[in-house]
Length: 358
Image 1 (spheres, rainbow, N blue to C red):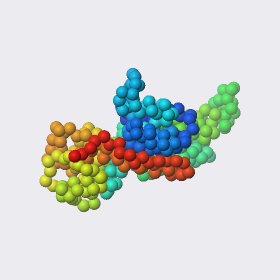
Image 2 (cartoon, helix red, strand yellow; image 1 turned 120 degrees about the vertical axis):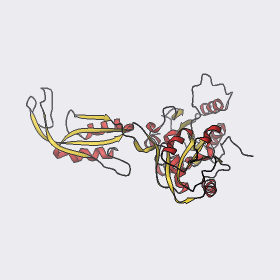
Image 3 (tube, rainbow, N blue to C red; image 1 turned 135 degrees about the vertical axis):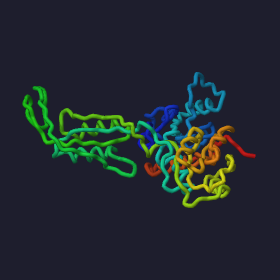
Image 4 (cartoon, rainbow, N blue to C red; image 1 turned 90 degrees about the vertical axis):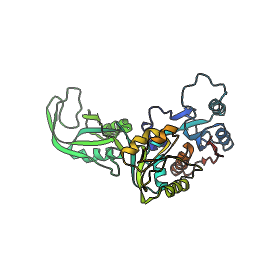
């Protein structure tokens, strides 16, 4: 669980979502991990057969509140079987929708989009730390903060800004100052360190600062910034290496994203080059794709009237909900296998897509 939280932090999830450990006790020993898309009853049977007592799934089987668990529907049947067999269920969902390497990065890469970026950056995800350190130990404290994750901005790491100045303080009779003497005013050459970090790292940054800083009482401020976190968020937008006629573009999407059927809006009568993608139900992002001048927007679960919203400038493609997210379980397996190379990490190949095509 710690590995998953470190990779796809809970803060990446949307407020409406239900992610993390849904069933089971976190203190239990793990015998094996089964990774799947949807944790339906068949996945529990597969986990039992493979001696896996943890299922890591993309979609949360438990999404809204339950007042009874009687086994009358597919959700309750799965939960009952999990509890009876002491199998834990851990869901990731929008933590991987918003992840820099998650659902939408995979779609963009499979289509060969270049210069891709987040379509809708996640708001209120950045904080800033100001702290004051004796000049002789400033580098040591700064490196500790960098190792804890502070100072990472997009493709850059170990970013900071420092200012030199003079700090002063006077300890009381109970103080044990690192520099100076109690009851006497002390002036010290200090460095002001400024670093930004993702909000979910706040407690780790504060703990690291307290451990690395030489002072008995550390002076620091943490601010919440209005800046958006442009590496984390919903969807991606990028460009094809060369523009494609609309029919050839549809063929490319069908081949690369392995979908049996594409529902699409009327052709816009121009080549397609700038493409936006958003796995899962993405109708809310049509306006974002239009505002960023995409030629096409690939998503799922579009309703009848929403196919009009692209107008004459945006080709809308609905490739199916499962189809737009189908590659994510492979990413989960790859990550866990690298972190735990000698542990049983099993990829379920069972079909959990409830939609069939005739």
